[in-house]
Length: 368
Image (cartoon, rainbow, N blue to C red; front, side, top):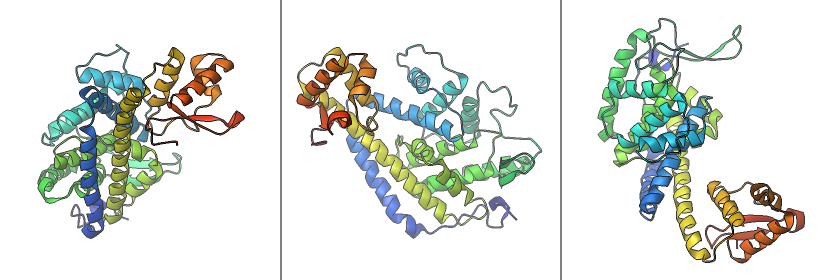
C-alpha cells in the first residue's frame, strides 16, 4: 500500500478542471459582491468586522485541531497587533501566537512564500510550547511522521508523511510550484491544491493543518490581490468530519477532483457567511438610525446582546425568561420592555403565551 507522495506521478496532480469552472466563476462573482458590501461600511465598521473575522478564524482553525482558545483574548491580541487600544486582557502564548500568524497573513498576504515565512508562522503558532524542540524549522526526527487514531495497541494509520530527510527538498519543489501557479491556476484550484499538497508533505512536527489553511487563504488572496477575509476555518470546523474525510481521500492518489470540488464548495459557503456578516453590520447601523426613540438601559443591553449573536441570531428566539436572565429584572418589567420594543419595531413577536418569542428586526423587511 503506497501513499500519494510515493507514486510516480507525485506531485503532478490531475483533476477535471471543467467540473470546477462554475465554482471558480461563482467565487469571483461573490468576491465582487463582498467588496461592494464592504464599501458601504465606514472605517470603524470595517475595522470591527476585520477583527471579528480574524479572531473567529484564529479560534476555529485551532478548534479544528482540538485546541480551544478564548475569543476575547484573541480579539485583544489582534487589536494589539493592529496597534489599537486593548483592554489589557491577559493573553496566553497560544492565543497570542495564532493571532500574530493570522494578522501577518492579513497584512502581508502578497509577500513571497518561502522558508522564512513558514518558519516565522510556525514559531508564532507554537510559541510557549516546551514539549517540542523543532519549532521554527522543518521536522528532523528520524521516526515516521504518522497521522494515527485508535488505541495504542491497535492504531489506525490514516497517513504517513515523507521521511524528514527529504522534507527540505519537497518543500523547495512545493514553493516553486506555489510561485509558478500564481498566474497559471484559478483561485480555488490553486488554493485547494496548495492545501492538500502542503499537508501531504507535512513538513512540521505540529501545526501543519493550521499553516496549510493559512497557505490556502494566502493563495486566494494573492489571486484577488486583497485579503480574503472569508470564514474558511469556521466553515470547515462546523463539519470537521467531512473535512478530514475529504483530505484522507487524497492521501493515496494524485487524482484530486473530488477534493477540489469539496474545497471549492466549502470556500463558497464560507464566502457567503462573510457576506451575511457584512450585510448584518450594515443592517445594524440602519437599525439604530431608524429606531429614533432612545431605549432604556435594560433594553439597550438586550439589543446589544442580540446583535452580538450575529446573523444566526439568538437560537430559538428571545423569550421573556432570556430577558429576565440578561437584565436581572422582574417578569412584569420584562413583559413591558419587550412589548415596547415590539411596538418600536426593534423586535418582531412570534407565538403566544409561554411560546412567545422575539426576534431582532435588524432589517425592517424581515420578520413581517
